[in-house]
Image (cartoon, rainbow over all chains, first blue to last red; front, side, top):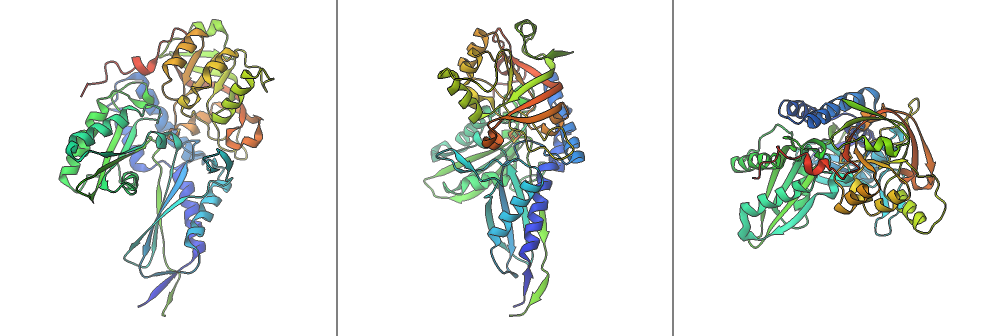
Length: 289
Length: 184
Ligand code: SF4
């Protein structure tokens, strides 16, 4: 077997670059969706808010300022090629990249070391959560996702009764959306269904990484996403919660197999400032062990 | 039409504002979030001296990003006001006339806003790069040891906001939805 060397320094550099990019450059699919929302929104205040958000994305990019002052808590998704060889501490090289972006990029440091006591800011926005998945290939794909506190706070997880089925699932998603007026709508809702208590929230959050305009490959779930989006927009919460037609830009559902007695459902709420950036680190040399 | 407001926010100015008005705010405000608001409320309760006279002042629930070189201010925008609900009645009683934040407030806060003839404004959350262009000066004013939770002093010039709750308790978060919600 031929293994290929991945330099930890390249991972650190890439993470720093992506963390900055995610904070400063609004995802093109999100920006396009905000522009499309302008043609749907009827409320004058709602339209004002959407115009401000589009203008904000432009100013942020031009002046390298973050889209939002809440530069979030970071999750890093690592897809590690099976044929890649990494010597040293991958976890720490990721943290170093996050640290560098937040310190050198004038981003806000919002992480507290002892939440139970409410004390001690870590000073560099680390630690980031790191999720590692093994994939085919010899390179490393990285996705950096900062997420703000306002939208995290209204996210929710529930173990629903199996008998409730789709009705209960939809009811729960609607309930979460109804409580999200302060989480900077228009929202993007990531919905995890199935799996278990521990990982359903992860599915919900990962669903937010899908492109706004993609369609679920599973037709049943694509229908569910469309129906949920329509119902959420029927709430009338509107941009910034000030009333209007556009409460959400998208609903993305991820399903996993699950125990017959359980129906875990999680809703990861994202504000319109849905931030993520992805990139790849390729090997620098070949090692024949 | 945008109503121009010059701070401090006097009772006379507050009286002219109605929920749903678009405003441009100019003058000095103080940015404070969870920890700073809690400390202010504690000082008020124990009758101690405050770092700032709150009479007719506007508090901006916000914690800006660090100021990059060559700029007047970093990215700055509102945080969720609901978390400040527990401290708000005391802050209003101590003289605060206005607040800028995002999202709805509790019924208790709405009634103390009415009682103290104050105004709750919302600025667009997540538009922090845009909003920073309406800030002409920005500095840490008190409790620097709190980092992002310190009190900042900001000078605003035509800062864009909406009146969300007015002195009569008119509330955009309940009124704004009418006509757009289809009870499905
Ligand atoms: S909810 Fe999102 S857009 Fe709003 S303040 Fe928080 S991070 Fe920023």
